Amino acid sequence: MSKRVDGQAAYVLHLHPFSETSLVVDVFTRDHGRVPLLARGARRPRSAMRGMLMSFQPLELGWFGGGEVKTLAKAEWLGGMPLLGGRCLLLGYYLNELLLKMLPREDAHSALFDAYASALRALAAGGADAPELRRFEKTLLKELGYGLTLDIDMDTGEPVVPEGEYTYLIERGPVRRVPAGTHSAGAGDTAALCGKTLLDMAADDYADPRTRLESRQLMRQLIAHHLGGKPLQSRRVFIELQEL
Image (tube, rainbow, N blue to C red; front, side, top):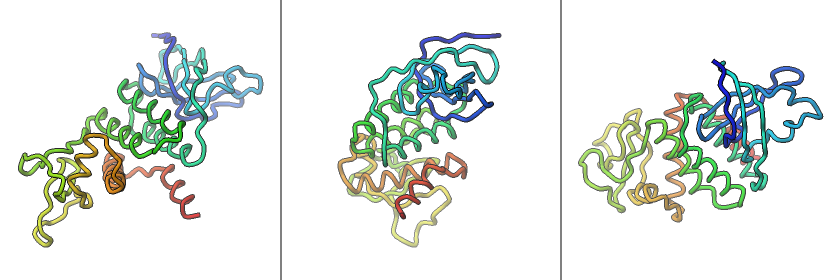
């Protein structure tokens, strides 16, 4: 059954050629999640859609169709977002790649859409990326059913203490570290991190340099686990550019 959708807030995640004149556009929408759309004629030089389908820019889209790939009927640029550049552009591609690899198609997550839009606005404004990236990553895992416990020791049920040292068990949460030689590290263990880092993450407070470092390491390990070994191209490019 053919269905028509109009006035849908969206962002372009990925474009790839479908024919000499058309594109398939993977978009992230507020009310329909990730949707693949066929943009007929969008590769033609005079196509009205050619300049509209830009990553990291807020769009209003309309489409129709009942198959797996719908047909794009309308694209309107909403404006108001500066273009990303340099490091921020790479970080934007990182956000897109996470959505493409982790979010099922047509699975709506309005809270994740808002977190994505907020992260893009922060990057476009040249703000510190750590808070917005960590908030987006946390929201992504929560929306996919992998929400993080950050303030409770899962062994004792007691609150995490700022001066404590913890290991984060990926399938459980934080546990207090014991003296060396008395704990056998498992596949779900992460590197040591201080209790203050966990509490800062729970409060979305990344002012402390140690919190920024340890939270990045923790989220990297958690996301790698839930990706099931699928590599992130954007991260590889970022590392290579840093080495240069």
